[in-house]
Image (cartoon, rainbow, N blue to C red; front, side):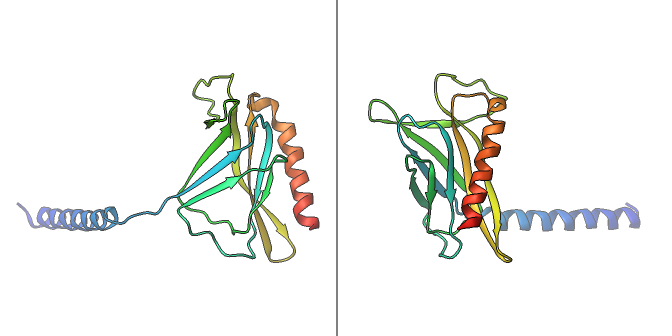
Length: 166
């Protein structure tokens, strides 16, 4: 083996060693996931907003339950935190039990007789010079996503007015 080949092989072995060391040190770490359950009233369809309050502390619990009111707008005392979040959308059915709703995915075919979740996302609104307010929004219903665009736009403008004027 020539000197240049040995040097190249040694560099490859060192890179492999560093890669394996990093991989095993990270794979042993536990990444905390937060589970948020959104309990939605029976027969509710329409837009939902969870308005976070950044003046308060973050909710460090690994399990958070939000009971959505009948008007669909919930103000919480916790500040918004990002990270690994599992969101469960749960709606009471006519039998008094709860159904877990699916998030609309255009790739998969869904049961059109059941409510689904559309447009789950986090919005931020600027209130004043240095204050941002975070809002989680989603739509629940049986409509096609393409039919909801205008409704979503007007809902978000109403939220912006509600947040900025208060």
